[in-house]
Every structure is written in C-alpha cells, then in structure tokens.
Image (cartoon, rainbow, N blue to C red; front, side, top):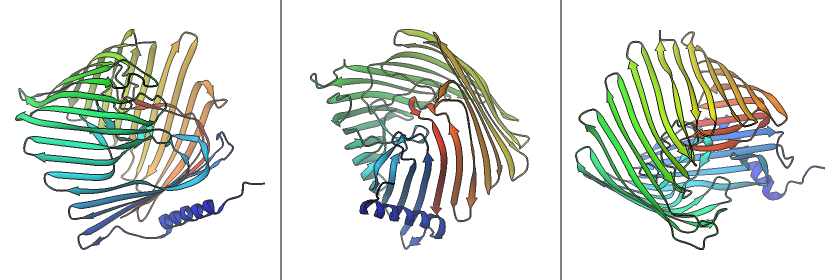
Amino acid sequence: MGRRVDGHSRRLYFVIGFLVLLTVAVPLQAFNVGDISFYVTNDFLYQYNQLTYNNKENQFYESLTLFANYKKWSVGLTLRGNNFFKQSPNMTLEDPQLDVFRKYVQYSSKHLKITVGDFYSLLGRGMVLSVLKNEDILRERTILGGDVRYNRGRLDLRVLGGRVKDETENQEWTVAGGEINLEYVKHHRIGFHFSYIDDIDTRRQLGKRLTTSISLKGSQLFKNISYYTEVALLDYQDTDALVFTDNGYGIYSNVTYSKSHVTCFLEFKRYKDFNNEMNNPPAADREDEIASIRDTTGLRFYFQYAFFEPDITLFFNAARYEEHGDTGNHFYGGVNIEDLMDRLNLSLSYGVRDIHYRIKRWDGHLIYQFTDRWSSEIIFKDKHYRDGSFIFKEIDYNFQVSYSPFISVFFLHQYSHNRIANLNYFFSGGIKVYLPGGTVVELSGGTIRGGQICSGGQCFVAPPFKGVKCFILHTFK
C-alpha cells in the first residue's frame, strides 16, 4: 500500500501542478502598467532518484519568482514548493513543503539604497563576511534583515544586520556588519570592514565572534599597476563556547600589471584559524580548487600573453603553498583560443599541485561552429593522484551537439577508479529544447558520479545520481 496523501499534501500538489501548468501553457508576458514594471520567472525540477536513502524516489523542486519596479522602489518574491533540497538530493522530505523562500523591498536613490528582506552581502573581498549565491556549488544563502548603503562623493558607507539560514535549514546564525570606504586620493581608497556573528542553532556552536579588517586598494599606479591588500583579525568572544578555538587572522594582498599584450599579477595570502563560518577570503589559487583558511600561506605568480590577431592567450601560473605543515608547489599553464576562423573556441590546460600529495589534472573545452546554427561542444577533464595506497582517478567526457536556437543533445561519460554506488563507469545524456515564449525544457537520465565541486575556494560534495530528471524554466518576457 502506498503512503496516504493528507489534505496538506494534496493542496501542495495542486499548487505545484498549477504552477507547472502556468509555466508551459500560459503566454503570460512581462509588462508595464504606468511606472510599474513586472518580471516573472518560473522553474520546475522533477527527478526520479533511485539512490534516495528512504526509498522515496519521486522528487520535485518548484520556484516561482516575481520582480516589480515602481520608480525608486522594487520588490521581489519567490514562492517555493519542494520535497527535497538540492544540497542533499538523496534525502526526500517526509512531507512536501510550500514556503515564501525569498522576499525583499528595496528603495534606491542617487546616494542611498535601503533593502529590507533577503539580500546578499560581500564586505571587502570576503575576508570578514561573504554571503553570496554560488550556483556551481549550490550555495544559496541570504541575510534576512536590513541593509543600508550610502554613497556620496568619495565616501561609501554600509551597515547591515539580520539572520542567515543554511540551504537545508538546519543551521542559523545572527549576523551584523558594515564597512566604510574613503577615496583619499583619486583612484586610491582605504576601507574599514567588520562583521559580528552569533549562533542561533549550529553544529559547532562557536559563540559570539567579531571579525575586523582594514584594506587599501588602488589603480592606475604608474598607469599600469593596480593593487589590493587587506588585513583582518578574528576575535572569539565566548571562552565557554561549545567549541573554543584560538583567535585567528588573515592577510591577503595582490599587485597586478597590465599593458598591451601582457597581464601578470602577484598574490599573497596568510590565513590562521580564520573561519568565522560566514567569510570566504580570496583563495590566491585557481577558482576551482579547494582553499584552506585554517592554516595556510601562499605566494602565487600568474602571467599571460595575449595575441590580438588571432585571439590567442597563453598563460602560466607558479605558486608556493604551505598547508597544515606541508609545503609544495602548484604549477599550471595552457592556452585559450577564441573565434579562430570565426568557428573555433578552445581552452586547454595542464597542472600539477604537489603539497600533501601530487595531483595532476587536464582540462579541455572545445566549441566548433559548423554553420550559423549547427555547433558541437566537447569538455574533457582528467584528475588523478596517489596518497599512500589510495589511488584517485576521475575522467569526464562531455559531448554536445546544438542546433541554435532550438535544440541541444548531450552525452556524458564519467570514470572513477574507486567504485561509487557500485559503479566505475557512468553514462548519462539528454536533450534540451528551447520553445517559443521563453521556455526551456530539459530531459536527462542515466548515472552521474558526483564528487567534489569547487568554486571560489568553497567546495560541495555532490552525491551520485541514478535516475531521470525533467527541468522546465520559463521566463515571462
């Protein structure tokens, strides 16, 4: 016997069905009424996931977002219905839920911007506070509260406060922060930044902590040089917190030289016990590499030379890092080619990161335009290393053929030396159709390996997937 669907669930299923029907069947358009303008998007994901822990394989995630503007005012509202979280797809909720996921009201004038509701925040370079959306790693946190920004002449002020929930709603923090930036000389600024964080319901229970920093940045120094440096301190206020750690600090600096064909920069970082759970300082490394902020020091030099005709860029990176007592190098280089013969885009790189153990990786991406409509795309990744007796090796081949702007067909083959979900080889594929009126429908299925995905120094471990997915996106425009 199947599980009985209660009245609440039936109402939720009705709402979800109505929103999907609205997406695919109603030619609603963005429109203006006098000074008021509306913009609506709707996306729906259904997946039949055979790897759920609780044998509830039918999963859905529906999101309907409305934006409206009236003169200096704007509002946003997102309604969400779901029975799983994208960050933990192998666990289906016992009962589907319907909630107001995101909402805000904003006032903007020439010098003042006030936001009440959900908003993103980056103070400085993320040393003291970084609450941003990162689609690559499914990071979708916001601050629910208030944000005031004031800009006049050479002075920028910002003050904010509110609460932050994690994506699966099982952790929550109180957050306050602000910054002041002053242009003391043309093209050169000094900044003061701070954040205050306290736990409401978290796993680590670090207690109250205050993070402060000072920054200097400038451009057009000797015409071709720009720079940025920031020094921060992390001070834990509660010595009787559940997990008490020593106070930490962070130092980051870069200098960039750019002239004609040549661009190069030098980056330095030093982070010691510098995790306040809401900060994400610069990685000073590739954006798709994991970055430690517990105990790391690094110095990186990056150089690129660009040919203008044809558009070819050669690049090389050399870095030296120390992480948790281990020291090593990270070298990589490659080439980017754009619009060669108005048909070919190509990027290819190879690197070796040898700190705790030697990691080797190849990355390749090719797009070839056969005609104005027909094109093909190939993505290749190969990453492998050995740590004692443990061997890691993963290879991806992604192939896609497109007939623009109507349809794309794609295929993904993945390999893992270590068995995942009792598999070494993974095969998946699908089709994406672009319908008139701003609708995109994607159908896919098969097995996907999952694994660690990094972006901006942050990482997310995606679980494997086996099943079928249907995704529908409609923009009312």
